[in-house]
Image (cartoon, rainbow over all chains, first blue to last red; front, side):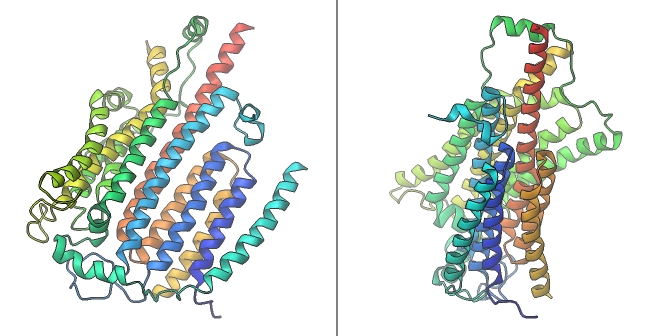
Length: 117
Length: 257
Length: 90
C-alpha cells in the first residue's frame, strides 16, 4: 500500500472538517468551545508539515554542530504563538459561556434567544 | 428537522472546503522537502549572533520579539477580560439572605479523597514549582521557555486544591501580589524593549551582554524576556483560576462557618 | 521506523479528532480532549519540535482541561444556587 506523499496536509484538512462538524452539531456551549480548539489544532499539523524536513534534527544546538540539517525553527516559533493564543482564546470564550449560562440559564446554543437583535 | 437541514448545509460546505483545500495542497512542496531560505539562515546564524542554543526561542523572543510582545498583551488583555466577565455581582438583599439561610449543600462532590492522592499531590507541589522555574530560566539553552514554565508554575497551586488543602490554595491564589506580578511581567517585557531605545538602538534590540554560549546567563535579552513572560503567564493563569473559583470558594467559606 | 510511527500517530490523531467532537457529554469530552492534546504533543516530539511539544503538554494536559473543568464546575454551582433559591421562595 502506498500513501500519497503529502498525507499530513490531508490530515490537517480532516481535522479542520472534524472540528467544524463538531461546531455545527454542538448542543452545548462548552462542546462548541472544545470543537473550536480542534479546529485550531489543524493549523498545528499544517505548520508542522510545512516546516518538516526529511532527516533533519530538532533546531536546538545544545550538543549539536551548527552545520547540520535541521527542521525550520521559524514555523515552530509560529506554532508556539498559536498554542499560546489558543489558550487565551479558550479562557475568554469559557468565561463568556459561564456568563451566558448565568444570564440565560441555558447551555444550548440554540436556546440563546436573548442574543438576538 | 432544523438540525438535519443545518447538517446537510454543512455537508455541502465541507465538500467545497475539502475540494479547494486539496487543490491547493497538491501544489504545495512535497512533505519533508522544505525549501524556505529563512529557516536555514536562522539555524546557521542564531548561535553566533545571539549565543542561544535553542533557535526556536531565539526567534520567538528576539528576531520576532515585537510580535511576541503583542502576543503577551493578548494574554494580558484576555486575563483582564476573564476577570471582568467573572467579577462577583452585587447581590440583592433578599437573595443574599436566602443563600445564607439555605441548608449547606456540598460545593464539590464529597467522595472520600484517597490518602495516596493527598500525599502525592503535596509532594509534587515543590517539584512542580522547581521544574517551572527551571523551564522558564533555561529557555535559551534547551526546549522550554517562559510560557511553558509559567503554565507549570500556575498549575502548582491547583495541586493543593486537588489535595483539598483549600485554605492554602486560597491564600496563594487570592494574594494581591499575583495581580502585581501579572502587570510586572508584561511591563518588564516592554521595559526591556525601551531600555534598548535609551541606548540608541532600535526597540527590543539585544543590548545586554551576550555571555558565553551554553551558560544560563547567556543570550542577553532572550533570557530576560523569557523570565518576564514566565512571571506574567504564571500570574495570569493563577488569576484566571481565581476568577473561575472565587464565587465557589467564598460560598464554601460561608458554609464552613 | 520513524515513517511508520508518524503514519500511525497521524492516523490516531485523525481518529481521535473525530472522537473528541463526537463525545457529547462535556465532562467526558474534557478527558478525550486532554488525550488528544497528548497525542499532538507526541506528534510534535516525533517531528522534531520539542519546544512546541512542551507547550502542547502544558496546555493540552494542564491549562485546557483545567479551565474547562472550572467552567463546568462553576455552571453546575450556579445552577444549584439558583435552584435552591427558587425552592425556598415557593
